[in-house]
Amino acid sequence: MNRILVIRGGAIGDFILTLPALKALRDAYPHAHIEILGYKHIAVLAENRFYAQAVRSIEYGPLSTFFAKNAELPSELSTYFANFDLIVSYLYDPDGIFESNLRRCGVELLIRGPAKIDKSEHAARQLARPMQELGLAVADLAAKVYPSTEDRQRGQEFLRDLPRPSVVFHPGSGSKKKNWPLENWTNIGNCLLGLDDFQGSPIIVSGEADEDQVRSLRAIWKNERIQFARNFPLPDLVAVFENAIFVGHDSGISQLAAAAGANCILLFGPSDPEVWAPKNEKVQIIQAPTGDMPSLRFEAVRDALMNKLEARSP
Image (cartoon, rainbow, N blue to C red; front, side):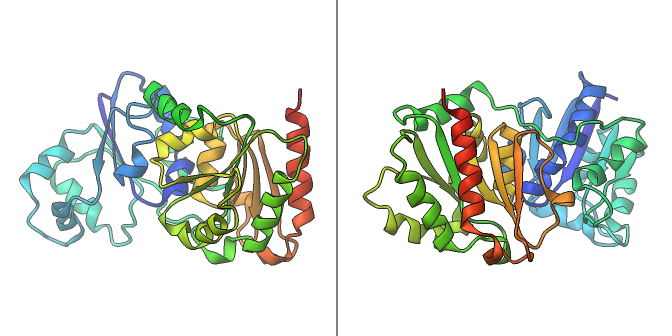
């Protein structure tokens, strides 16, 4: 198997949960050229970072013809797809139109992965099924990312003058139902700032989707020593997370923090951690008692954070 294409759209968490499957593929074919067709700002986490040699954008306009029945297919893309010995696709293709068009290009070995996750087993296990069809075992479901030297340099540049340990908060997610009330984040931050023996650096990470949450926190803490890391490229965030204590929700950024090796406290509400929680060793899950995030008591998160800080003390 010399050339392999993995087609993986989806959000950050979806991509990271696929990494154990990609690792099995890379381990089985260490000398193959592996390429990922996906959202470039996400798939860059794998590009020349162990998993794949190249990434191509799934948002490329002419690709849309492959989702139309009996469409005239662009010759450039037809040649592109035909050049792979194996294609693994996680695209939603209920009528098989995309698959049929790939076959028209001459693609012979095509394996389809699940486009949607059900509640039967952990998401990473479900996403590993295509590898099992190839006879590859996926024993470890803990995703891992491999930052480059340049990634670490950029991350260290941000952290350079900040005292350790870093305690990183991510107060957002892809759904308001998954978010802990903002006043609890304010309380946990104030608690950290009020500790006489905490000389480390509180950091708030956020993207565009978190702006409403974080705007309020910036206003509250504008004169405090809390740092704000806004809209960092994902590979740079990996370097920020590596040696940090991280507190977040059920989100893609939390998946990234776990995969980077952060010591995580993850707050779960309506979603099932048996399906969605990262399988990494340094991950502690705290679930809202009723499934609604307001039912998750501030004291439970505070105590978990204090325990992790105490464990880090010399």
